[in-house]
Length: 255
Image (cartoon, rainbow, N blue to C red; front, side, top):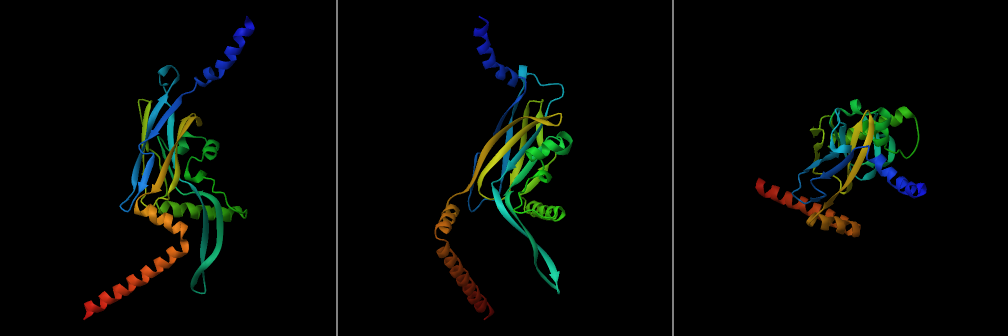
């Protein structure tokens, strides 16, 4: 008789243990973003609920951090140096896998709600991104180039952080808004939501977002990929034709 009860108890034990931790039920306002000629950017709404064991929020509710990551891409960074009064390319560094887009929003400053080790593991914060350099080297030099990559991404609007970008209502419902710039790279993005308590991540969930070109832009992109040489020749011919036309118009206006 005892053995009959042993197997069912072993089966439901993991479920009972999992029920002791809260769970996330996240969603995003758009799973598909189409880029057309008039695309000026978008604003994504990330929202959801926290399901607590027993249905009651604790006295001190957890914090929330949401991250949107773009597809990884290789990056080559060059450092310019002035030699004999001329600026030329000097040192360079290559990276195999750099997030093309990264946006973090949290209910409080990320450094105040998560332990440093946890922040590195989950890449919570721009300073904790793992950029995967192609080769090793001097740590100080590597750090300088990493800062250069991050600075370029920040200035382009592709990397951002919002210390109070997540609103939590009654310790249960949450929402965050993250802007997507007009010149965002296309591909598969991930919207990651983290539930944080006592400096640790106690629950996480992910949703996928597809950003793709649509209409005439998609046709041009596909055609350029399949017929790269012809596309380049056509682009040069159009540039020459437009330059010649502009010169003719300018001459007529001067007469």
